[in-house]
Length: 138
Image 1 (cartoon, rainbow, N blue to C red):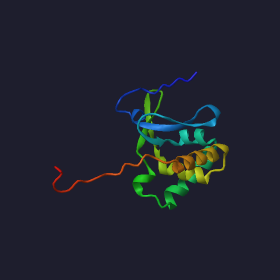
Image 2 (cartoon, helix red, strand yellow; image 1 turned 135 degrees about the vertical axis):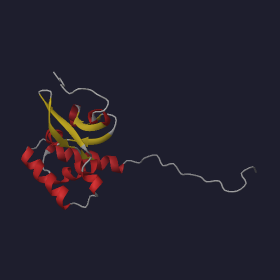
Image 3 (tube, helix red, strand yellow; image 1 turned 90 degrees about the vertical axis):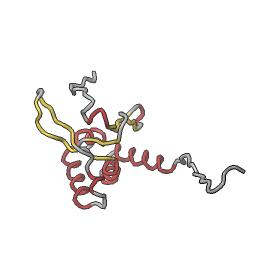
Image 4 (tube, rainbow, N blue to C red; image 1 turned 60 degrees about the vertical axis):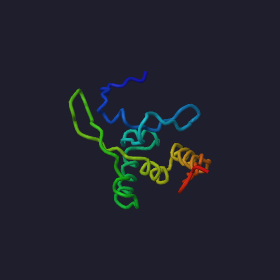
């Protein structure tokens, strides 16, 4: 049974972000309607690694990566335990999640890398803008 004790308020970042999860046959599923951002605990569950391994790789990315500062952290989420605010957990955006998948060695990370590669190789609809200059009543 999937029970969530998280209060569902519209001001909560939980309602304004998306996460990745695993569906049937180990397919990557996007859950939510906003920008993709995940906490460390969600990343541990998603990649199937220990917290220690994930934290070490995250620190490597944050300290020595070529990501811009706004690509490293996507905000914070409140940590509520027994209806009391205990602190804040950082949210990591999609560029960090992709970088993590290349630093981690697990079946889930391998499948996510495959998913990202397929998404990058599929053709997207390209709209070519046409600008009409001058007299357009011909």
